[in-house]
Image (tube, rainbow, N blue to C red; front, top):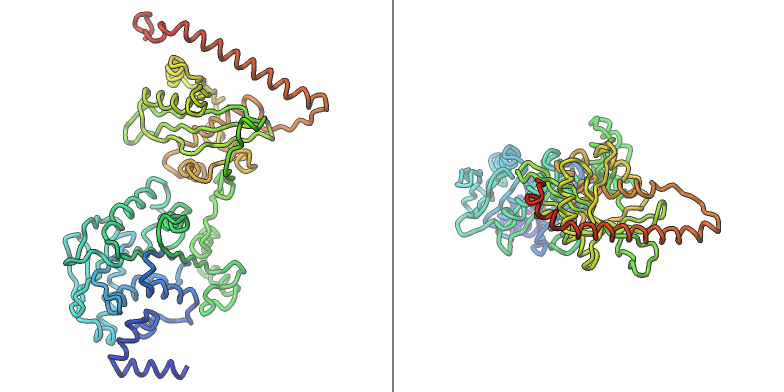
Amino acid sequence: MENKEETINQMILDRKVRKEIVGKSHAWFFHFYFPHYIKYEMSPFHERMFTFTEDPNVKNAVVVAFRNSAKSTLFSLSFPIWAILGEQKIKHVLILSGTQQKAQTLLQHIKREFETNRMLQSDLGPFREEKNIWNTTSLYITKYDAIITCGSVEQSIRSIRFKQYRPQLIILDDIDDLESVKTKESRDKMDNWLTGEVIPAGDETTRLFVVGNLLHNDSVVKRLEKRIETGQMLGQILSVPVLDENEQPTWLGKYKNVEEVKNDKLAKGLTETSWQREYMLKILPEDDQLVVESDIKYYDAIPPKESYAGYRFAVTSVDLAISQKESADYTAMVSAQVFGYCKDRKIYILPNPVNKKMGVSESIQKADDISRTLGNGINTFVWVEDVAYQKAYIELGKEKGMLISGVPLDGRDKYSRLSSAASLIKSGNILFPRNGCENLITQIIGFGVEKHDDLVDAFTLIVLKLLRDDGGGRVVVPSPYQATAIPQAREEAEREADQKIRAEKEWERSNFNRMMNPYKYGRR
């Protein structure tokens, strides 16, 4: 302690010593210039935050921490100033927040320190505030010929520069909010803004720091985390809930024990959902959520159908959207391979379902291509809702020789259909690929909230058809004779189905000219 106090005294008396120490250490910089922000002894996770900022090899970092963990103070107040004053000698810092009001608040905090922090003002000042052509507000630090610019997701920052400098340090602070993460459309918009404008605004040496809370399992911070974890992006991840896996406070300087954390929760009057999200970094399902993320079961490989006697067929389900208006739904196509019956039934959802705006002719061709691909050149089943406006679609498909048929909905709405599928998802009778079905899974988990549910409709049609045809999973214990007879009966049923299909295709071929020339035969 004496050595530390002696060092502090030297720093106070000798500017050269002070600037040498704080130039190399962001931690020392913060403790010396911002002691008025330190109300509690700092935690090891704060030290790791400092390490991220001090290490120039940390090109990107994603920091998700509980509310009031001091993350914004360290990253959006202290770090930008230290990056200019310290040995990194940054010339252009860009700070972005969710709204212009938040961005202005961050800049005002920095400005206030320049105006009231005498030691900081003496070492770093003077400065001036100015507007620039991007309609963002900046603080220009004359002594270092450097600038700190604050903006928001509402603004375009394409080609932003300060003199010859592109942003060398970009800090994103709470760019998400509960509204912006609500739908996949808005999450995609935020991600596109980040990857299309923000990251390209820098150069190959630019460092990116993303700081925030966990508001959704598909938010920008979660997407960035996944990219770093899978090696698609270089970077470091720090995730800090208020309690660790042993139910102990992660910031012992602020909370001495778990009881103090619980008391803080009661004092704030937060709901359990809000507390878990904002402080424990956990997203709780809504009360009416049919499927949660933990319900989803994955497969690594589908059993080879040649060696697995339980293989039945491959199918593609189509949810048709004829309108191509911007506000219209998308045509969705979900494919699956089906094995077994009843409780032993496994539905392997195939990766890369189709979800796009397309006309009838294009969608017919796409469904036919998928059908033949799944059958290695031979048609496989295509199922469509058996409703009035799709009957023509089914007829057109038959004209092309597709094995297409309608599935009656029996008056079941979207919710009841997904409800039926939910139990099979939870039991593991429906399996998803580890990669390639992210949009479908997002729509299933976010059903009722997400703007689009076309993939869910196509997916549940497969389940509805199977439940209609061979039951919802009732378990029948066969006698020894039945156990032998059941496979034989199934083989006979399959042979009969094949014969029926061949007969239908022969009829279709014999009537091909009539079907393909509607005007000649009086059909319109």
